[in-house]
Amino acid sequence: MPGPCDTLSLRRALTFTTGLVECLCFAGAMFGWASLVFILKSDGYFSSGCVNATESNATQVLDCTGQDEQFSLVFTIASFMNNFLTLPSGFLFDHFGTTVARLFGIFLYTLGTLMVGFSNAALSIMLFPALSSLAAGGVLFLMTNMQVGNLFGSHRSTIITLYNGAFDSSSALFLVIKLLHEAGFSLRSCFVFLSACSVLHLFRTFFLLPRDKIPYKLPEGYTYGITCGKTKTLSLEHTTTLSPGSEEKPLNQDLAVKPEKSFAECLKSRFFVLQLLWLSVMQLRHYLFIGTLNPMLQRLTAGDPALVSRYINAFAITQLCGVLCAPWNGLIMDRHKGKTRPPGESEQETDLRASVLSLFLTSLQCVVFSLCASIPYLPLQYLTFVLQVLNRSFLYGGNAAFISVAFPQCHFGKLYGLIMSLSAVLSVLQYPCFALVNGPLDGNPLYVNIALTLFSLLTLIHPLSVFLHCRSLASQRAISSSS
Image (cartoon, rainbow, N blue to C red; front, side, top):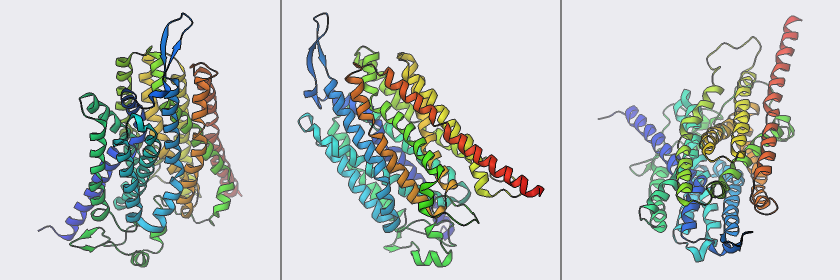
C-alpha cells in the first residue's frame, strides 16, 4: 500500500494537473469572444442592428454597424466586470477562504453558461449578464488556483505564471465551440455541456483544495481536502501555530527587513501610479483589439465570411500559446535567483532590478503589436495575433510579479485587486473608441490605432523610472561604503 507521503504527493500532483486543466479549459473563456461572435452573428443575435443602406453608386448593401456596436458593448461590460470584480473577489477569498470563494465562482460560471445556452436571437439581451457572469466566475477560478504554487516550494513562481498563461489560452474554448457549431452542434448543447462540467469544479473544491487557503511556507505534515468524510485541511489557527503568519502571506514572499509602508503610502507612491497606468494603457489596447477584431476582419476581407472564419480560427489557435509564453516572463524575473547579491543590496532591490527588463520588454511588445494592428494589411494580422498573445502573457504575470516585489507583502492582495479594478475603469473607453470609429471616422480605425500606439510608447516611462530608482539606490550604497 502507498504510504502517507506517496498519497500526499499524488494528491498534490492531481491538484496541480486539474488546476491547470481548469484554467486552460474554462477560466478565461470570455477572451475568445471573437470566435463566439462569429456564431452569434450566424444565429441572428442583435440582427435588428442590421439595416439596408445605399452606397454612393446606388448599390443596396446590408449595414450591420448597429449589430457590431451591441457585440462590442457586451464585451466591454464583460471585460470591465472581469477586472473590476477582482477586488471584491479578493476580499471574498481572503475573508471566507477557498471553498466559499469557489462555490460562488462556480455558481456565477454555471449561471453564465446556462444563460448563453438558453438564449436566442429574440433574447440577445441575455448576453450582457451571461458574459459578465462567465468573467466573474473565471476570475475566482484563477484566484483560487494560483495558491497551488505554494505546494511546490521552489517551483512556485513557475506554476503561478503557468496558470496565468493557461487562463489566457482558455480563450480557445470558444474556438472549439465554433468548430463544433460548424460541424452541426447547437450553441445550446455546447453550453449546457459546459454547465454540466461544474460537477468537476465541485469535485476539485471539496477533494483537491483546502477549505481555507494554502499557507506559504507549508507547515510540516500539511494536507487538505476531504478523505473518507473527514476534512484533512489544517485549521487557520493550527497553521498559524506551526508557522506563524504563514496564512497571511500572499503568493510571493519577500524577506524585507525595512519598516513596511502603510497601505496609504503604497497608494501614494510613484510605483503604484506608474504601474496602474502601465497596465491600464496596454490592457485597453488589448481589449479594443479583441472587441473589434470581427469588424476589422470584415473590412479587410471585404466581407468574405470564409476568409473571416479562417483568420478568426488562426487568432483563436494562437491564444493556445499563452500557456507556453507566460513562464518566459517568470524566468526573466527569476534569473538572479541563486546568484550572489552585491554587498549591501537587499533582496527587494535585486528583484526590482530584475523587473526592469520584464517591464521594458512588455512595453516594447505592446508598441510593436499596436503598430502591426494599425497597418491595414490582411496577411500581417497573423504576426499581430502572435504579438498579441505574447504581450498579453507577459502583461498579467508581470503585473502580479512587480506588485509582489515593489510593495510590502501584507498589502499584495489589496493592491493587486485595486490595480485590476481601477484599470477596469479605463478599459471602458474601448466602447467610445469603437463608436468613434464607426461614427465620425466612417469605419476607419487608423487614427484611433495611432493614438493607442502613442499611448503605448508612454508605458516605457515605467521601466525607466524603476531603472533610475535602482541606480540611485546603488549610488547611495557606493557612497556609504566609500565613507
